[in-house]
Image 1 (cartoon, rainbow, N blue to C red):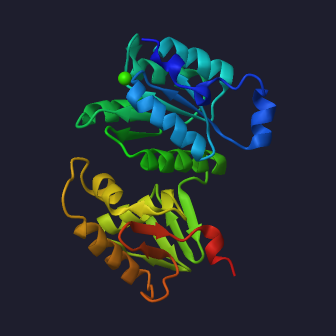
Image 2: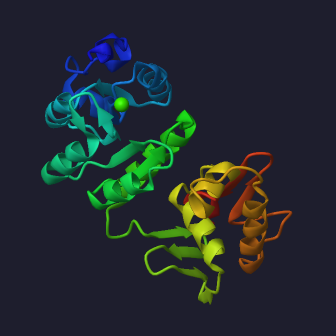
Length: 257
Ligand code: CA
């Protein structure tokens, strides 16, 4: 399938400007490895709109070739490609570089996701996905990589410090005792510090990947978490509720004196 070649100007490999022009423009390059044109086309436009330089590979062979030649900052990798399995591409990419990889997986194939993460993928999204969600994930992996792997598990917002690996949270000098889901929710918000995480994203990621229905549990857990952080509902310092949408952790700079 060669449909990717019709993906429009946005998908052109940016050879004319070269890597230096890209650094100057500040647009992180995202390699989208997907053969389904119905997914690729809107996606490439959304990426461009959000300040990314999107390039598209429609086959496993092209994916490896373009990853080597274009040095993308992030790879979005579909698992089912016309000439091979995305997992093999993931394995191969990982052997060659540390580029962050986000897998696009089909609904309900938990094994695929686990295998993908074991192969070295950084994250995954489940089809059908909201483009905004994928863009939030891209930003999150970029942030984690830019921070460097040694500190990426620790997020500090004002007095609040969340250390994801040992699952510990401090407020100033005091270590807080959060329930399991309260920690999971806070840690998820911390991944996208400053950006809103929707109730639906929290429900599917913190609770159950096959979740559908009420988002009430995310609200209750968020409230419990906020209570333990001593948040003033009228003037929260750390966990902000975005009405009708979800929650966000304050960005680090919001809490600077
Ligand atoms: Ca596909």
